[in-house]
Amino acid sequence: MSVSIQHVAVTSVTRGLKTLSALLDKAKTHAEAVGTDPDVYVTARLFEDMLPLSGQIQRASDTAKGAIARLAAVEAPAMADDETTFAQLQDRVARTLAYVESVPASAFAGAESREITVPAGPSITLGFTGLDYLLEFVIPNFQFHVVTAYDILRHNGVPLGKRDFLGIGPERVKTAA
Image (cartoon, rainbow, N blue to C red; front, side, top):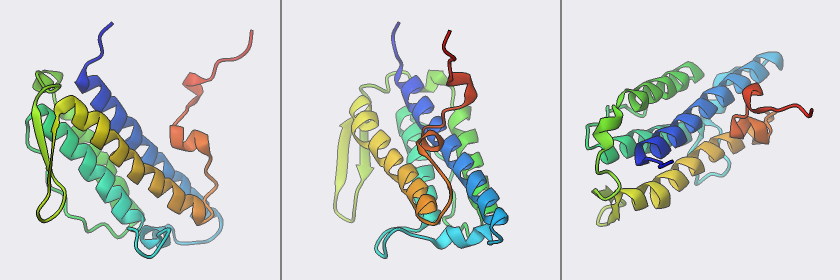
């Protein structure tokens, strides 16, 4: 069986986006259970020089959209980084997921060897082949922002565990015979 770059890219970011949505749901439920406005988490951060929860979700969204667009040689939708509520963050995740799932597999033809450039600062551009871009840049960068969002919520008392991050649902649990 061969594995396509489209399958790896779409599966990786789809799983992470669904995880972000589920984390936001759990955080909202927890906040309501303890009598807190869930929107207070939107500006929470782990350390003063790190982006808040909203920024982590925006960067995860941008990384997912950018990866799919660059690999498929299509245009990514623009999204303003102006979310201030849980509902707005959930909407952004949903719109990003819809975009990722809308790009046809055929658009990824030749993506493994496609030359990809990524701006990385005022005078820095990174260059990759499509496969190296996905494996060396997209997946680690995307996962960094997803796990940092998880860590912000966990640090603020949301009862999350490793299974929440991994997105392991009942369909994956096998019972002993």
